[in-house]
Length: 446
Ligand code: AMP
Image (cartoon, rainbow, N blue to C red; front, side):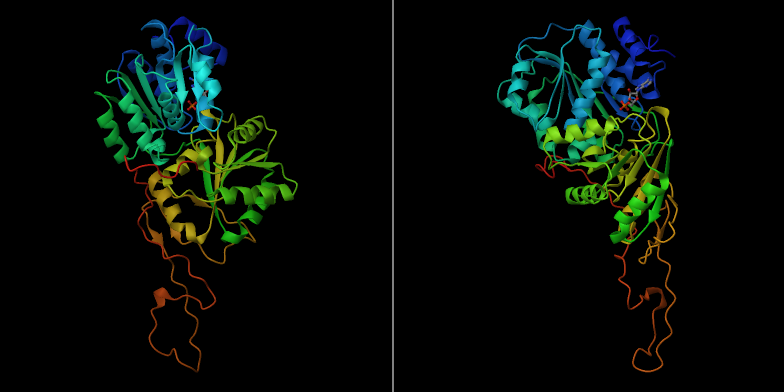
């Protein structure tokens, strides 16, 4: 199969040739003809499978072939994405695909001045990539009209809801023409999101090119168990031992990112960090420098988990496990992209056992443990498996002292050494994100 047989026009085929795309990926093979035929779409595809081109190529073709010329402050196709970095990245891909077409494309997002964006929108834009908050600001300031809008794309739709954009999205829907094409793309879909999507879409075609919620099999995954306080030390040890060159590291909190970056820089390691508290320009610069291999270690919160495309990234390290199991798939999806192989290592401490169990259940695999000599944890991480079981091996009881109390019966299974801090009592219940729609903004910037 070729892109030509999917019905793409010559100017797009020329762009693809320049980019070196020879064969459509599975998601492209299914999405392109459906979008060209005007269908609504609900597509679930693994990260790195080429879903951006899956919606952008046919969208550009429809814009070039059909519909009126764009008028002042109008937009004909809108791609909503959850983060600013993703807006830049998706727009960059769109720009490359549209190289030989007479279309105007642009990206708007928060954290940067709104005035240049308003200026740019004055003459109208055929295809706009946007984050929801800034899009609404522009709409409310009359810098944007939706009367010409023919297609809406929600990229990483579940993430948008999870990041607290539900109210913004509801407000955007209200402003859009009822008659339009809607495409929903995401690497993971919870059942709740599917239900919602069903309400938003008109007779949608459902595309699922890979089993749901399965991590890319081009990524070799394993975990190292360690005590929480020794994670930084283990990270540096593994880095030196493995002679890591370019690593994307995920930490749970903004403070965690800053602390690790500071520690690494203190050791003379070329590291930088990105999280939601940093100005947009600083975030983008750190990312650009990492992509250009000018920064060796990029430490990030889950703001970088979704969609970022870093060419040939060999390694992702989960310094902390994600709170939401689905984010694990997104994080490790930054490596092993476009058919190349990658590695994902997670440093896991005892109080993360429930998170580990939830990830194993979601990805239907038991992650291989590879313990590091000298770093074996004092607080053992209970065994887990993909069934969601957390197996706590009972410790061998100490012999009761000859004298003093304590001579009564003991429950051996619950024995905890007197000097040991017991890990948080594991429950076998997986940690699941339960997206809530229309309940007002929640956490905005990870
Ligand atoms: P995406 O999943 O959209 O982020 O795409 C992942 C990477 O695959 C990007 O670097 C794309 O440029 C690349 N890509 C997408 N489609 C193809 C294709 N058909 N052939 C080769 N590379 C592709």
